[in-house]
Image (cartoon, rainbow, N blue to C red; front, side, top):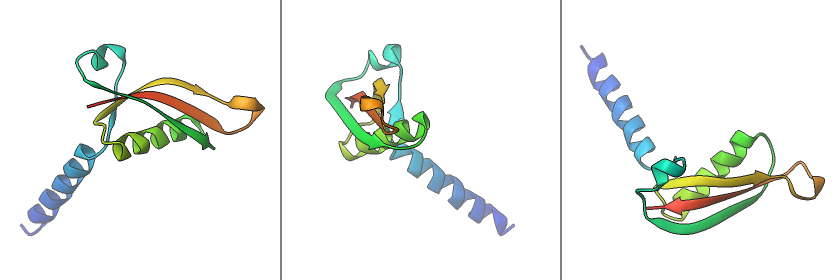
Length: 89
C-alpha cells in the first residue's frame, strides 16, 4: 500500500519534466503554431540524435514549446554538426 504514493510521485515528476521540454514537430503539425523565428546550434559532436537534443535544449532556453528541424549539416568536412530549426509558441 505504501508503494502507491511512490508510483504517483514518479509519474507526476515525469509528466512535469515532459511538459517543460520543447517538442519536435513536422511541417503539418507546425501549421497551427505561432512562429518565433529560427535558431541555430553549432559545433555538435555525436549522432544526429545528439544534434536534435541540443536543438531541443536551445528551443527550451528560447521559451519555445515546439521546434521543427529545417536542416542538419556538417560544414567544412568536420565531424561537428550544425542544426537549424524554426521555433514555435
